[in-house]
Image (cartoon, rainbow, N blue to C red; front, side, top):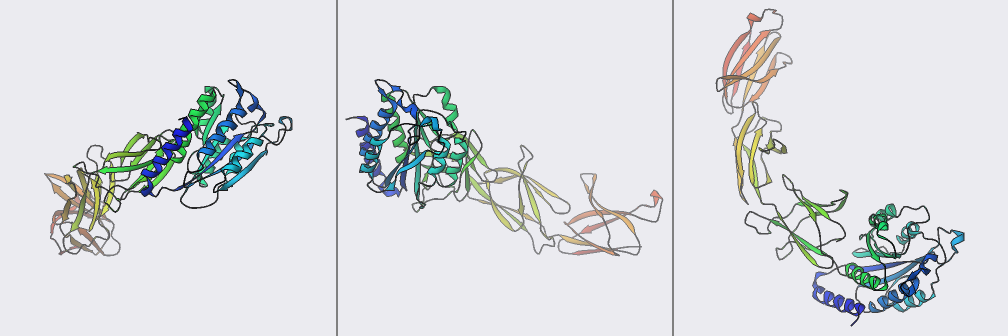
Amino acid sequence: MNILQKILSILFLFVTLNASAQAPKTRILFVLDGSGSMYAKMGTDNRISVAKRLLTRLVDSLKYQEELELALRVYGHQSLKTDRNCKDTRLEVPFSPNNHLIIKDKIKTIRPKGTTLIAYSLQEAAYDFPKNPNVRNVIILITDGIEECDGDPCAVSTALQKQGVVLRPFIIGLGLTAEFKTQFECVGRYFEAETENDFEEVLNVVISQAINNTSAQINLLDSYGRPSETDVNMTFTDSKTGKTIYNYVHTLDYRNNPDTLYIDPSYLYDIKIHTTPPVVKKNVSFIAGKHNTVAIDAPQGYLNLQIDGITNYKNLQALIVNPSTSEIINVQDFNDKQKYLVDDYTIEILTLPRLTQKNVNIIQDKTTTLQVQQPGKLNIVTRGKYIISIFQKKQGKTHLVKNLNLKGNQDITVLQPGKYQLIYRESAVKETIKTKTKEFTIKSGEMKHITLK
């Protein structure tokens, strides 16, 4: 059994085992280099003959593959190299079911002539794919040279992905040295083939990756190691460039298992789980053509902030602080319940005065409730202009609560229950010694009236 027959057997096995996965249809566009350099030697033959022979056998082996359509684009085969025709590219066989014989017949007629125009050929390839949803569009570029027409294959490749060619192109370099690899890495997944055997083996790998869906499930683990956490956004970024590749909202399927995703295995990913605070797993790789499982610790519980009675605050909030870094990780409204990673937090409640609760423990699947007393009110009535501040004594120290800016002859301030001092002086009096102090108590749900004369 030769390598291509093995490929076919593996593909049929994959389809049988994954029939229930409802994998998307796949379209593969072969982009073949027809430039003059393809007449260069490869072993005892030349590159174009090897490429035509192996590509013909490959196309023939795929004719029984379900949910797969093929097409063929060739460049550099219509004009002589001296013409330097940088638009010499053509879709020779468009996508359609059962067009394998047409592709094979067309391959036989190709005679290399011209220049290498990769960027423009990829740009035109965007129009070769029918605009259908739920289809995996794949390009396999077979070339023996780099761009000769001043195009930017990297930029075109990025644009292709945005237009629905969701997998980065596969590039098979025939007879190219390792130094050319860096020039193709930005375009897609690069494979070197120096001999005919290399080329056949590379085709094996590329077709396997192109047809066999790479699937994954992201197991968000709770405190007990169960993949029960869900309903949270996940961002997949390229570990090398930081570019965002996918954004998904995690879900469990109808059997309560993490849902299956289809992933481009060519990237090394950083996966950010947007819990509060977020969790990041770096340098995650996926095995092409297989189902991958990625486990990430993301245990969560709830924090419920409540205030007794009727609150007089317009919008009472609390700062949720990481006690290790002092970083504010969230601002939560009162009378609201939100999810957090299982951990201890410092909660700074933006009452007047500010209240701080340390070591607030969030427990797996439990709700931790933090309750604050209903505030009272301080009503200050004046008959003149005053400089006024509210202070509170804590552990023998005096702390400023608020400087008042009276508008008119009355000011109402919402305060938490407790004992306070009002320290004030008439604006017109220019003697510090005339500063006065008045002690008062605020009770929950009550109004305290103070008149300054």
